[in-house]
Length: 340
Image (cartoon, rainbow, N blue to C red):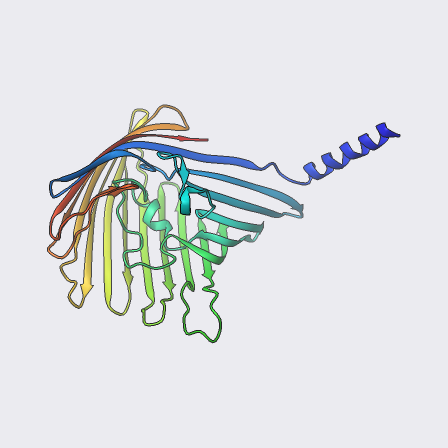
């Protein structure tokens, strides 16, 4: 009798396990030595996320039959240089992404915290992505709650051949009798990728608080892989009723041996009452060498030149300088990234 019960219990466990796909644990651990200098004042030390953001995540799917699948994605930021997460008190949360999904042949619906539609072009068409001292600073040029990710969002993603669409709406979750729609966001991104060509455009609107204007973001990016060199270009703007910040970036990656050379030049222009001199330029160059498919060593140099009303500085997590108005800022970093 006992043997029969044990056998039935084992079969029950196998039945539950076979109904679900295996859960994956994944992550990136990235550490670097970085040095920044602003008007003769320098900072140096060990930091993280110089090439890709350090992270720890869990994801999985379940096949529901008939082509329908359910899944989840939980991902948190790591500060491995100090052995902590990025939440208050150094704990680990899942603020990078935290959503549940339902997908079939018609597309995928995501519900939770996820990247906004207007974020992707700023990182895909930048040789340095959105990390480290080489990053173009094109994210959230006018601050809004969904510059990178949106809380309380519903997304729909669809791919049909070379064309893909990403639409999103995020809820501010304010009471109907409160004149404050902070957090409401709506956006869409349409992309085309076939052969060497990759091109995309995106638009989004983030609602402001009481007395603050909405932020409207539009950006466009394109890259073309020629084999021996991959040029890329992005252009975009953030705008509210008071000012507009525009940027463009021209970048390139060049395969060299087991690695690649990266270079980018970007320009930022601010328009509005009393802010016409808040402009800056940035140049960055670097090289990454792949020790394996999962491990890369890298180095990056960057410099920012400010106009009279700007004080933008070269920085990385934990090493933020303080450039003076009209001054310059420079820096370099050397690091290693390992993914699992």
